[in-house]
Length: 184
Image (cartoon, rainbow, N blue to C red):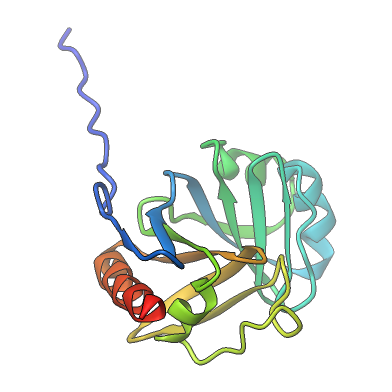
């Protein structure tokens, strides 16, 4: 019997670097991601099976043990497991009616941190990223430059920019330029 060869996908941002004294940019570690759709009646069962309570209010997130759930719409979430857990299996095990699509190879993320992080993001996104309007834990799907992104505030000076792999170099480049401008 022939040995099976498993191809490992290289991160589209492998080796990418950029930033300034006030803004640090780095590609996020690989993660498992699932786009989840479900009715309100199925949220409790899915939450129990996933080990994280699915948020049900706009602009909210929930997280535990490396697993994140982002509210994107009344019946839509983006799930992320930084430890590579099997989100699809956990969704199946819920017994709830839902639609789950593994988007692990479609998406990637950029971590933007430092005192100038919000300003760098605002170079391509017109959202008010003040702590009062976009507090720690806030998440939204929005536009960054010419692309769609999901923006999550990790802490006061740190954001996670989720985007499609095909747009990752564009997003990183725009953020790198904005980081340099923030330092000037």
